Image 1 (cartoon, rainbow, N blue to C red):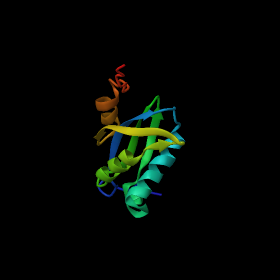
Image 2: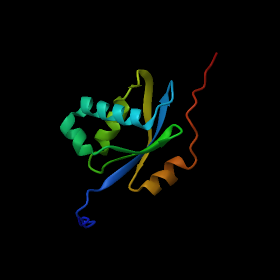
Image 3: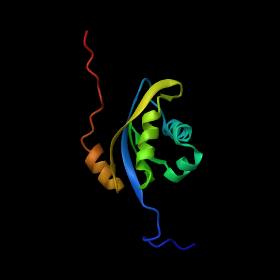
Image 4: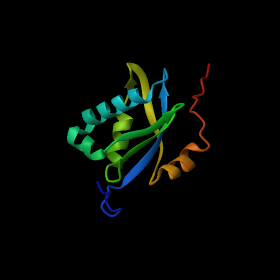
Length: 120
C-alpha cells in the first residue's frame, strides 16, 4: 500500500505531560484512563476526531499525540482526569509542539518533577 503524500496526511500535535499521582502507573493504565476521560467529557465521536495516542511514558513523564485541530479538547480531557486505577492522579500538560523532537527539547529536557512544599 502506498503512503499518502505529506499534503494529504493528517497533521498532529504532541503534548508533553507529567503524571502527578499517589502511586506509579503504567502506560496501559494511562491510555485507558485518558480515553475514558475524553469519551465521558467530549463524547465518543469527538474523542475519535482527537485521535489521541500515548507515544511514550517513562518515569512520570510522557508524550501524547493528538490531532492539530483538537488540541483544546484533548487538553480539557486530560485536565478532567482525576483517578488512575482508583488512586488520585492528574496529568499536567507541560506544553504542545508540532514535532516529537520539539516537545522533547522544549519541555522534557530540563524536567524537574513537581514537589509541593508542605508547611507544618
